Amino acid sequence: MNNKSHILSYSIDELKEKLLCICKKPFVVKQILRWIFVNHTIDFALMSNISKELRERLSDEFDYSLPSIIDVKVSKDKSKKILLKLHDESLIEMVFMPSDKKNTLCISSQVGCSRQCTFCATGRLGLKRDLKQEELLAQVLIAYGCFKDCSITNIVLMGMGEPLDNLENVMSFLKVMQAEDGFRFSGRRTTLSTCGIVPKIYELADSSIKMKLAVSLNSAIDEKRSLIMPVNEMYPLSELKAALLSFRKKTNYRITFEYVMIDDFNMGSEDIKALTKFCGDISCKVNLIKWNEVPSLPWKSPSDKKVEAFIEKLQKLPFAITYRKSRGVDIAGACGQLAGGVKYEVFF
Image (cartoon, rainbow, N blue to C red; front, side, top):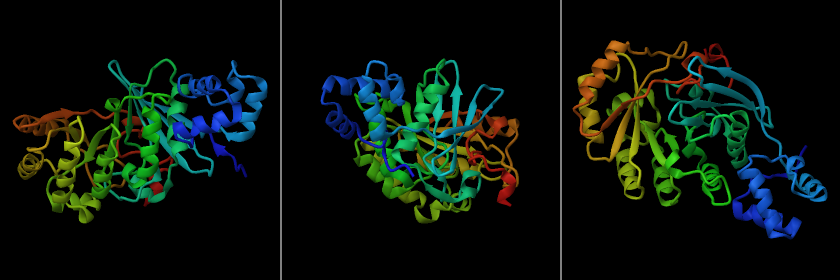
């Protein structure tokens, strides 16, 4: 068993201190940090401007292994879903979505998920464990290595898991991502998606870490939302809204509400009325997503005609409405379809 600490498990300040103890030279520490966070290389053998002796010492001191790439599926829309195997044989998925305007990396925060949203394949897995800081950062490094021809412009924590249920590791991950001597990745281009864990939203707001917040809403009617999202029983809409209003006061970014359109469920006149009341006094946008069907789950995706009619009615509302066409649907890489390589049939 490898008992060495991982090179990606430290905060930037901790890593600087650790490296300085080993090499004694601040400029060499900067060189090593540049290899990791600018050149995206953690294999010490490849750090050509570092002495061979120091490279061997670093290899003896740190674990620098990365998850194994088990499978890569490529969508007709050029999205790529990558299946990764972690050190304990756990499997997670991440998705890279290139486009003309931006290249988005969607990463996972947990192996599985405990929140059991009834329209989501990941929720059927249950929670296996949280991902550690180094496993979150490893996804980014792997993506930089795999997609050298496409710079990563946006990162979204929208893969497997509920990020706020793993908040400690997620916050330490974001600090390294945004640090001056880290990846220097902009908070404006980072989005965390949550089903609505109210106490953690307050904690996140007080952290001063910059990121955009997306909330999986899907209904502004308590009874309906509870039916598809058990979290609503614990944190109903009134409590969620209070937390979001508090969060909004402490950030420069408006909140995004993700609204998965489910046929014959959340696209009626009462749903529009409730959505208007819930969102009308929050600086926000509502991002509509057509439900991505998962075999054997008890929901149906609406027709394009129904989607168009719903969007037309929403255009009169006092906040921005966007319709996001799902990427990677044909490779089960779209929102709600990630299942860590597990075949859907095993759920039932």
